[in-house]
Length: 498
Ligand code: GLN
Image (cartoon, rainbow, N blue to C red):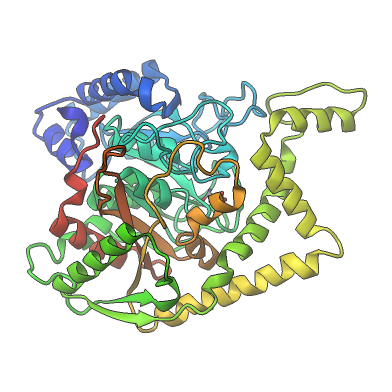
């Protein structure tokens, strides 16, 4: 079952010539054909272009190119529909882009191609990455492979669902307030939000530029670490990308391999503000079990305080819409995609945006222009920026005493289709544990940590834990997540469609 293999298993087989890149791609396309009619993760895919890339990878392999030189050689990778992939459609799951195709590759796509990856496919998402369930897509509903009556999370729901259903071993998405970690948790896969500035955003359609970061989904921490290493690094086309060397993240995992207490000497913080009553009992039980597991692995678990946590969601829902309202001004009927004509440019512009954007995007634009408007700017936007600084300082202070902070990734397991789509506030609370990480600019990872109990009506559903790491502390974060994963084996569970 080639389609179920991880990146490291696939690269081993490729290196031993036990299979070809073309066969790996075919297994992936076959699995997509078999299950994506139900899951509906892919908006489109260009099989001919993918086959050409796989053949090129096979030529490289035949010429003796190794995975040390090209770490993703022959590995299929699919993209969230907001990353520019030259010649391919780019819609951000919105109608407003019409038949737009990218004229260039995003830096991350360039890097993955240079690393030998077979990059193909456009994955469904919430429109312009605004949402937590992938239900705001203008095109289709993606369903959770563990239970097709439930959402896969969002906004990168297509990325998470396609990995959970073994359609591709790796996908790449973006995380502004949780959009990688939350769907990863709800679909039982690994998702990484790197530190702000670690990965170039060039070619990522901007939602909230000071919060957005690109990152991978994979089945294992090791695979996610390998892909992060390919994505990361400074890029002169994104001035917020940081000129720090990229560590060998996979080597960092191997350092403590085989040790009985691989996390000895590391400290994990539990934020007392997160241990609020009313946490879902199954989420709570999974957290307590994971705390015990981290202790068994040698880590010391201590309490920390993040005193401004209560303000994170409110702060995020001022800053993110403010930036979105500015970023989305470019969709004006002139520069890109769709247009609805009018008597004059202003009417054309209004009609285009009225018809092209969905309700959630409009809600964010209206909120954003409101908090930026004169008279309200000081009261909302400026204050939110000040609170954001306090939130970042809370984390930096906590990281003086701990190496990572452990939280549930989500307050509950995957909810039902339609359960929260009429209640934006309920939907916003899905990201309560993930949002602060973006506000603070630190890194975070979600790792499978168990399941809910199956009942007569509902099969068991995956749960995820989140580790938050220091700025540019991905190495330690990966090490901890990997040790946990290897000792529990939750990542080995495959969804019914996988
Ligand atoms: N769910 C959050 C929002 O709707 C976060 C989305 C994201 O990370 N892109 O804004």
